[in-house]
Length: 492
Image 1: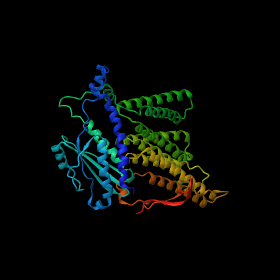
Image 2: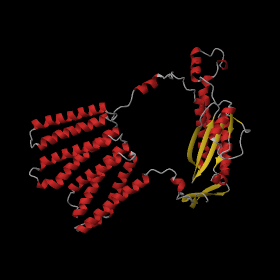
Image 3: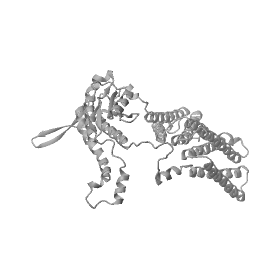
Image 4: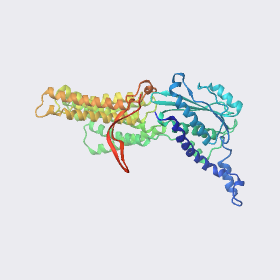
């Protein structure tokens, strides 16, 4: 752990830099008497009065920085850190323009009663700063509370930070709290609304509604055209005089329906893509399932295949609409639904290959079943889970890389004339790599639970090996770096 007494110098410089913008902003608010004769103008005086309606709340305000409170079990271990933090906050408060008084400080490091602290501040009209520290594994949790005279509540900030960053974050937290205190104004009287500038009024009057209208319209138009084409193909007609009117009517109905839906409901971009996933993946699954399972037994497979696609698309749109009725869809949820169809299609093909023991035959039916079930499972999970788009993309990349890597490593099994057992072993290796890659990617991107780091010690708490420059050789005026192996870390 770094020497806690070095925190004072670092925080003092930071507090001066943080206070500089406030001084620059306060320059236009100088009184007219401070300007040279003849330099003041009515316009500039009005600007100065508007820029600074009241004096800063922190100017020469008497302030008491209480000793940093510590838990009884950590009092001995954190005492040096708390002492350094006391000096740091006192210096930072003075740099921010506060008048720090040492007479009102208590000797105890127990956390003060907050209600009593508020009453004490109101009675003395002073500003009380009450810091507290808690050790959280390799980190510390810093809590700053400000109680000012006239206020009926505390201003509190809490951050969990590394010990090396304590000086910087403590100074920034205190600066932000004081800035909030300076910018606080009394609420308007009852029955009077605060004036709003023209830009503010415009933002409030222009709601962002149906941002996914374009995405929804594009998907609906394309699917409407596909419906018209499917109807023409299912009828057994090849007459172009029937095809093009059906394409136009289907696309127009899809576009008009999307516009009506976007006007009636607030459709976001993620909502539109989620609904699009329910359109395309079930339609593709209907085509693949029919082609792989029923086409060889049908009298006219081409007609019935398009009808099967229409049935799948209609069912998918219905289920997606039911999913959206549960609430708004996030970007991660929409991407999860799209990803579920693609990953399910891949896994379904691998399952059919493993069942048949023949990788030379395209697993059409397996891909269809996998796409339908994968989309259905992912679409249902998207309505319940809160995931980000980055997490979903990472899992997709991990699954594809794992599957491709395992398939490449096991590729000698399918050289020349492989047996069914060898082909199944190759498929099993590819599927295992696929699932392993997805699992590793999920483990890496999973959200960290609160307090998990504090509950379990860090795996690298004893340090890590390092290789490179570990020292320097000095002979007279000549210097040379010393290369080698070393160990970097804190001594337990």
